[in-house]
Amino acid sequence: MSRITDLNIDDIKDSDLLKGFDFDNYDDGDRERWKALLDGVQQAQKGVACDAYINGMARLGENFSELPNLKELNDKLERLTGWRVMAVNGLLPCEDFYKLLSRKIFPSATFVRDWHAQAFTGYPDIFHDVVGHLPLFFDKKFSDFVSKSSGVIYEILKNTPDGSAEKEILIQNFSRYGWFTWEAGLIKENGTARAYGGAILSSSGETENLKERGYDEFDLQEVFNQSYTDKEFSCRYFIIDSYDDLFASLEAIKTKYGVDKSIN
Ligand SMILES: [Fe+2]
Image (cartoon, rainbow, N blue to C red; front, top):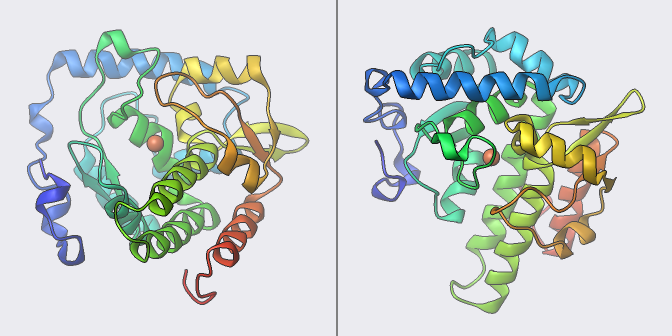
C-alpha cells in the first residue's frame, strides 16, 4: 500500500493511486464484517440520506452488498465524475490531504474495521470512506465544494509558518469545518433534515445519535468555535439550506484569511 508520505504529491502518477492494493488480500472475515456493517447502515439510512447521496449511489450502480474492489470503483468514479480514489494506509498530513482533494483525488483506507469497532470507529476504514463518502462525489456541486474548499484551505495553510500558534488554530478551525460539513453535515430537503455527511451515512450509531441530539442552523463562526472529538459520536450537527450555503461559507473564509478571490 502506498504510504502517502513516501510520495511526492506534485508528481503522483495514475499508477501510484492504487499501488500495492490487491483485492485478493481480503479474506472471508473482511467480507463478513463488511456485510454486517452494511446491514446496520442500510436500515439507519432510511429517511436520513440526502437526495444527492441516494442519486449518487444509483449512478455508481452499487448497493455495496459485497466488499467492493477499489480498482473497479476507481474506474467508474473517474469515468463518471473525474474524481479518483487513492488507496492509503493511514491518516495523512493535513496539507497533503487538502492538496489531494483539491486535485479531485480522494484518499481511501483499505482495511475493514474490526468487530469491536462496528458501532463506532474514530479511525476511518474502507466502509466509512467508500459507503460514507463516494456517492456524494457524483453531485457536481457538492464535489466542487470539496475540491475548491480544499484548494483554498491548502493555500491558507501553505502560507502560514509551520509550528506557529496561528497555524495550529487554522488547522483546528478547518478540521472543525470539515467535520461539521462533509462528515456530520445536514441539509434541508422538502422541509426535513437529511444527511450529506459521510460519518452519519456510514454509521448506524451516528444516525441514532443525530436523532437524539437534533441540530442547529449552520454558522461558520459557530463551527470554528465548536470543538469535537473523533473518539465519540458528534456533539452537535449543523444544517444548511442548500449547498450554496457551503460556497457562501467558503467565500467568507477567503475574505477572513485574505485569500485571492480567484483561487478555488
Ligand atoms: Fe470521512
